[in-house]
Image (cartoon, each protein chain N blue to C red):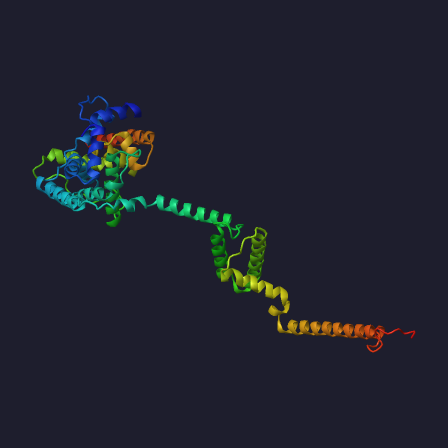
Length: 221
Length: 180
């Protein structure tokens, strides 16, 4: 009897229709199976199935409308790459603009980024951010003054600066009512002391001073 | 269509919905597919239905077919094989042995031919599923060892061993039947 590999080669020949001698028992068994007198399908049934198959194929044959070239350019990976490029470049630009001064071309980007940050910041952080921005404006003014250039006159620049200056001049402005009262009392006390000091000084000064009527006269006389 | 390159070109055209190419594929493969299904389900009507469905399924999936290891023939036979498995499952028939034995031949066939067919089919029932699938794909479907291995997700060495052992069992069974 043929071994498994030899039998396999012989079976390939049998399938291809070559006539083989039936000397080997396994091969003759294989031949009996391969040549089983199974009834072939009737011609008309075969044609019916074929027609059904081809009719289905014809339905699918409808040409697909290819998308316009411009859409194909913007499809798939290209959209993702473009979005990534825009995202990265915008991030880099904002970063570069963060240290710019009013005379820089990137300054409007810096201002826009600041406005956006202020807009999206939670309420609790807004006052801190405003103070920070006011300091930034102050820095910019100093820079521009040093360069002897006029600062921008835009109200949105001036307002935070004005706020900051107000804050500096009147620190109690943004404080709580209790602190405000304390602060006012302190100021009053200080003013009182100052007034007292001034009064005392005046008294002492007046003591040293000669009466107006004696002024210019010789005391020895 | 015997040459692989020629078959590739026809399939490429068929993937573009070329009716002539699809017709050529049908003509080339239908009889083998039908015989393979018929010997498994033992019913002409069922075999016709499943064979027709095999080609319709092929049409649905043809666009996604790629020459990755498995050839077209084994891919097509896999569709047929899966449809037969589904049919057995649907009919709640556990396997080859329990399938209803309807006449494969007709009244015009010689009694000897019918007897041979029935003897061989009876002998095939003594094989296990893998052995039987290998024998039917190889000898009825006309698949090569490699194609059979790809269809059944087995190794080629495994297919060679299975077919060698299966033929020995069938030969023994046939001898017993003849002697009886």
